[in-house]
Structures are given as C-alpha cells and as structure tokens.
Image (tube, rainbow, N blue to C red; front, side, top):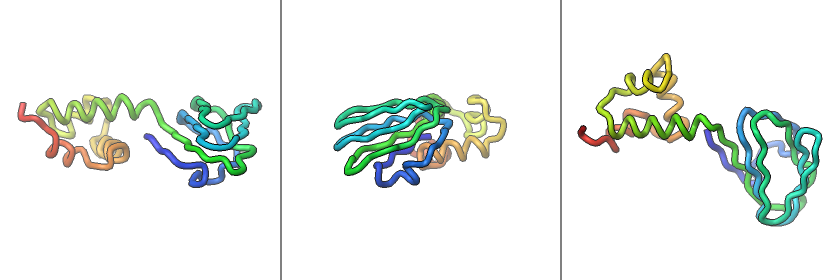
Length: 132
C-alpha cells in the first residue's frame, strides 16, 4: 500500500502513532520538528526523514511548514509488480495468479490488487495481457 499526503491533509499530525508501514517525510518549506521513538529530529527545507515500520512518531512543531508524508509497505512493491507481470505475460486466470503469489483466497488477492492499482485484476488483464 502507498499513500501520500501533504502536512495539511494528514489527519491528527500531532498524535503519536505506530504504523506497520514505512514513512518518508519531506519538508519542502519551513521547519518541522518530529519525535521518533523518544528522539527529536528537525527537518529544514528539502530535508527528508525515513521512519521504519513500527517506530512511534509524531509532529511536535510545523508552523508554516509545507511538505509531504509518504507511507508504504514493502509487500506492495513486490507483490503488485509480480501480479501485474503474471497478468500481462502469462496466460493464467486471476485465480491461478492469486495462488502463485501465495494468496489462499482469490477474493483477497483481488482486493489487494485493486487497493494497490485502482483496477481489478480481471480488468487489468483484459487491458494489458499479451496473447501468449
């Protein structure tokens, strides 16, 4: 999963949170002070901070600062990419692709694929598949 928001769009930015995702915080303007696992970091213009999965973090100050927060999981990069490859280049049903990628239920695979690509696997396959 990937999600990107501006500082303004990020809900409850000053509340401590522990995510099971990786987070990149980029300050495009101003200065931001963050707390990450009991440590304090200051980001100035064009600086980035990486927060690994599971670290508690929150914004302490961000007056007039602008920037972006990118959250992602690593499973997205591999699984979604491999699913697209299989749907495009292999003559497999969506069910077969799901099982090859380790999903026990094709329904869960379809939900995962649609969540990360904004299109169902069947629709993706009909638009991109090569006749192999």
